[in-house]
Length: 181
Image 1 (cartoon, helix red, strand yellow):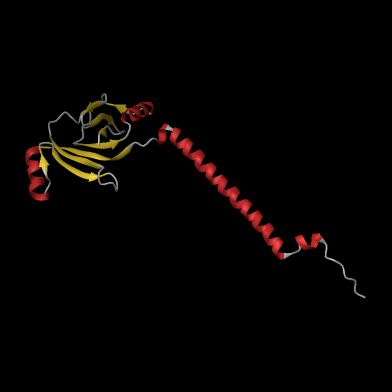
Image 2 (cartoon, rainbow, N blue to C red):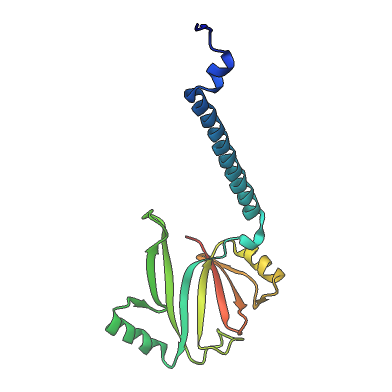
């Protein structure tokens, strides 16, 4: 004869496929939560390290200007105006652009021919000099000094920004400019 008995509680809870899937889902959710938490703390730690590390400081944000030597800067400006349409002025030409999608954040890049006899590029013997736009010029100069970079002069401040000159490894004079935009 058949004996009817109620199923055991153990069998109902652990041998039912629905309950097994629930247990698996909890385990999977826990693992996903653990991984997500690890990534979060990893990014947070990396963010703290990056922002407190002066070697990751933002340095160059763009080209501020191109300067070069030529025999006759005025004729050079006229030639570029006539043949390439540059809107020249006594200093060369200024190219205006926007720093971001915000159309109120205007910036510029300067193009300037210098007389071939200029001493402005010294101690470099090259016929050109690049001006780089930078942020936090004072902090950047301190960092460059620690790194052994040759600083040619002291930071000078004008109504349009701060400037300093440095030399690269081949003796090219570089102008660093923190604009007041």
